[in-house]
Length: 443
Ligand code: SAJ
Image (tube, rainbow, N blue to C red; front, side):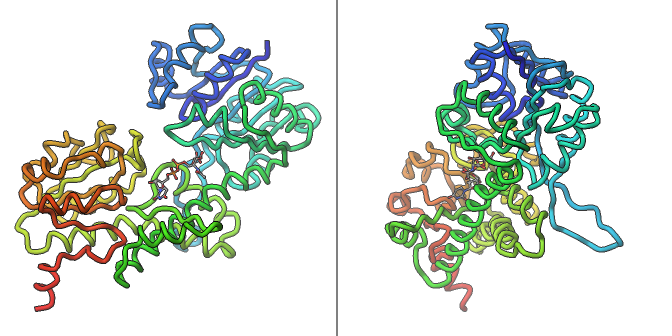
């Protein structure tokens, strides 16, 4: 039975390890975080993802998955560690705010396997990385073992493309792009993943595979930035951007994404910078899209300021802290930035989220929805969790102090909220400023 050592037991590494463990491989899952190893050994999991608990339990119970803090000898090594953004250290006193990839987890994972490498091993980088990482960063590190890449070692990049919230399903169903440093490496990885991947597997070279992954997320980021810019223009020219996008998308070759309070998560807001860092002078579009999306939380706060103008000590009830619908992840969430910005501006903010229990970046932790709504002056919907669409405006109207609601995700039935007596506002529609406030402002 082939043995696989998976480095990094996070959102990608853990499902991948469990998947191989339940498909005929002996898997050793490695994480440098002792807490993660302890939790998994107790039969618990540290990540919320539909179906993951059952899969990990099955793999552990079968004896085909073991978790530990140190790597060991294996036939295959899979590196699935985070590649977050870091700010560049200024050189020559020059300021450079352009974020770039922090590859320290990749390099330390690679270092950690060097003593265990033997001839014939296959090393796969799964972590999303700037173009050239596999060839120029990973390969030289692996050669510190004395083995030669291409002759003694097979190396490939096999990026994950799964959507948080649908990881297990997409791990199996999605097509996969595998980039080898040579044909033999790519073919070996194909054979491995074909054990559970039902989607098509495409082979290419390592740097192309790195770019493909980055291009997918950058395409989405630029598209969302366009939607956000359209939303701001819509407010300016007096139309409803949601209706306009829906109509534009009736064109067979147009698919505009949705505007919102910004782009969160660890992928879409990060990956475009990996392309920009490879070619900073020739990526103005990609960089501008990032700035446009990063500015959305501020736009939302400006909108809230207008809505509560004239109210004494306004209380803002925030609905949703997670970075997107129906997930529990609030890290890098634009909603958290909105809350921080509102607090800095001196507003009393009561934030709630059915899935998020704690947000390290916030001083005040999420509270129950009822508590957030009680006595609020302005309700701001920041995450489109399905259950918010089912809220009864009549019931909410009884709980609040002032009836003002702002929907930044286009997911509330605002006509029903108006019937319940609310002044409604929608991001990307020209009605963000209540007529009363406008009248005051004009006087
Ligand atoms: N968002 C919008 N408008 C939209 C769609 C999304 O504002 O129309 C926002 C979301 O609210 C969220 C952010 O963008 O804050 C990102 O959400 P997402 O669902 O678009 O993507 P992620 O980051 O959860 O997962 C992406 C996926 N990539 C693509 O769809 C191309 C996933 O397949 C990747 O595996 C993942 O990044 C990754 O790990 O790279």
